[in-house]
Amino acid sequence: MRLEDIKNSVEADIAIDHTELDKEAIKTPQLHNKYLIILTDEKLVLAKHNNDYSKLRKYKWLYYTGKISQEELEEFGWEPFSLHILKQDVDKFMDSDDAIIEARSRIELQKRKVQYLEDIIKMIVNRQWLIREAIDWIKFTNGT
Image (cartoon, rainbow, N blue to C red):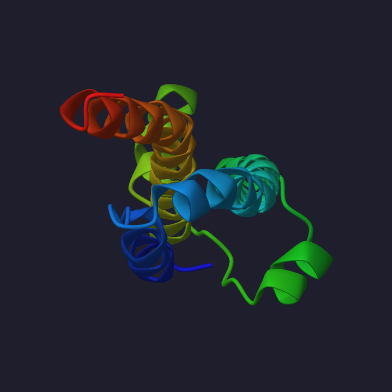
């Protein structure tokens, strides 16, 4: 799920209708469940991105050290790496590799989505408290 889609969904879901606090209170567990399911799915995507990144780093290490097989080169569509680089310089090449940078960017975006969803779930938990406080305030102002 795209981050923008999640933001739009949250914006629509999180608003509290102060005229129907009872319905809003009942809606809270459903919202909690909805975003918990999304969070779980997004954490699984993050785990997959991390696994893909680990595999990519391994193959890029083999590539830059000249240890990758011809079959693997063909499988990935990579040209043979013709430079001979020092062992201590392999990380510099790997860190500046476009595929590695793209994979790290995907992981970072996914981490942001997970963090955002975790914050939303905390907000939903606090939502129940806000509704209860609003109901108590209405009771107080009405003298009951």
